Length: 276
Image (cartoon, rainbow, N blue to C red):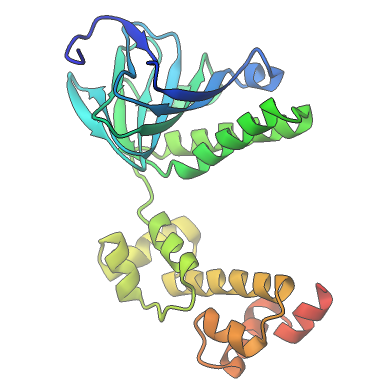
């Protein structure tokens, strides 16, 4: 069935979808956005559009499907996205028995698309979870309280996230996974070697990328993430300072307090008191 490239729009009986359309929200129309949604696609989910009147972002959260790129099928898996310009044939389908969960946004037009160097559909590495989460929150609001001001903010966020992803598709960041690992375990004795191993690049390349993307050295960003976690723990828990120190990677309360004062400009105790 999927080798047949005849025009088709098959959602399938088993696929479950959450959709918000521009008919519900004027802000979507203002941004040129036609609709946004999440599909938990099953094997009968398949689309072929020969002359699509829309630009489409299709990001994979889990599972895998097949997308049409350069006259052949490619696998689209987690943290990959299928970007397809308007008026150029695109095609995609779920594969196998496992669910292919994708988030997607369609645009009729948008000024920023004029700057994209995208003539044909591409499958590229993109962090899709934030876009998926924002669409999920927009949908939940739309079927619940449906407050216009809240939905407007979710739509604006989705638009900005999609823009950022599309504008960097040729040079996707290799570092987001590194910082996610650090944030999940700030108490680990992180060194530049282990950070570079996660990104699968050399230490020097890591330094260059970090400087280019964040303006600071890798270990400086590790410290920043540790301080962010520490401020949260100080404000939101009653954990002793010594325990917080070890949980964010410091040997003792003295070393942690010294670093905290240097970065936050006050002691952990004073910070906790000022936010109590």
